[in-house]
Image (cartoon, rainbow, N blue to C red; front, side, top):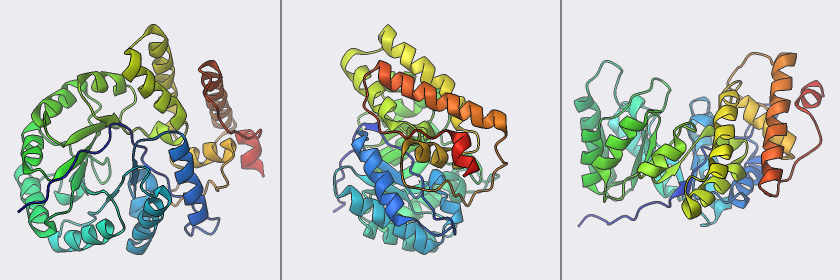
Length: 325
């Protein structure tokens, strides 16, 4: 008899960063502090070992280590999901999926662009997912339309098939298209398969249409603003005040995608977290204009938090000062 699974919580699910030491090794104490920051900000779940975690730059053991660390630090306060597919080979994937699940993760996430090549039809993707399902028996699964190695969006028909299986609980949608998301949500309606939107500009629209939550990279910079947004949306809907905050988050979102994830680590360092900005993903050096833009982003963040009376812990250093140390 197939095990019965429950839906994951609604709300904010940050795609977690991986703090690194100056020598590029894992900074597990920094990861513990980062996990606490997310939890104290009121998030509803955590997605570690994802693209923002620099998962493709980690070894298999490092992927397990960061997942295990986040699960232990969360200590059951929120569920944790993590990526388990890094090959098109079903056996390799199922072996690693079991290892990830054994860390205590609530669900293991499958990357659509890994399971099938860009030229392969969706039937191939479906077949490989089915093989994984058969070999992982009672492990709850999720789907991630990860932009790397390429963004492979799934159809509403595949979403319905996954929902009907009773095995899928999490879908990180990166279509950035309200029409596409609406069709997917209609396909999974009434199931435990929840859609979590990665895109800030379409966040409120998707929530109005029935998305279970949001999972934007901006939540790595200022998760408190998103938890406040979600709380007010649930209680009062899209008021003029909420729309003003939302408009600011949409504008700010354009900048957070630059120099990422280095920029997010730098921003958190500026907020007072004891982590470095070291990243294994190379990026261009920030110009003076870039530093000023991120200082402005930080000031906007502080202003919004003050306006809405959200308590924050920040440092007094500017981005420019941090870069010049």
